[in-house]
Length: 268
Image (cartoon, rainbow, N blue to C red; front, side, top):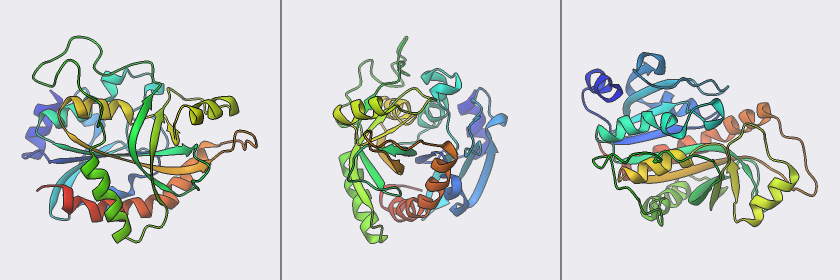
């Protein structure tokens, strides 16, 4: 029903979907010819309950490309299954969207990072105890066992790095993102373990959407905004208010990167 509702509301489905993380919803203000649809109006859409997530689907034009922005996402820790929280992306993918750009605010684990760094995600660790593909497979949506060896499309990561350089973004890195269930933040021991497991950043989102996108045959680009970096041997308490504030400060760099990038990878 969600896909049919959106088809009637939007007419043409966008080719590119952007999912914006905590404190990063400002990119929607750059859309031309915007059509704003509150999540609460869309059949079966979850409701976003987290501070910093507006709860709108915004469709329109960026750089002459037709895009849909999910302005506010859903999380496993809110009580949703990963199948439920990825329903909005699934509705857009089955409507014809072929590219996903997903962003998040995350905690830095790599000691070489600094708050405000943009990390292009090249791989992930899934520590969320659920998978959106669990249960009967719908073959027309995708294969039973999707290959995840290149979940983040290498071509798009290269485009993103080049776009970041063109946009003059100084703090731009590659790295591996780890998704945990939340909502509690990491202890020093957990921080140390995740770093040793190979993660450069940690958060509570993104991976379920990426799994669904890969299953649907979409190209995927992931970007983490590093809101803080903690040394587990000299741990500093983390407050969600600080994460939101720092994410908003870095949001300008993310917006410049995406606006530079969309005309290269998107389609009208």
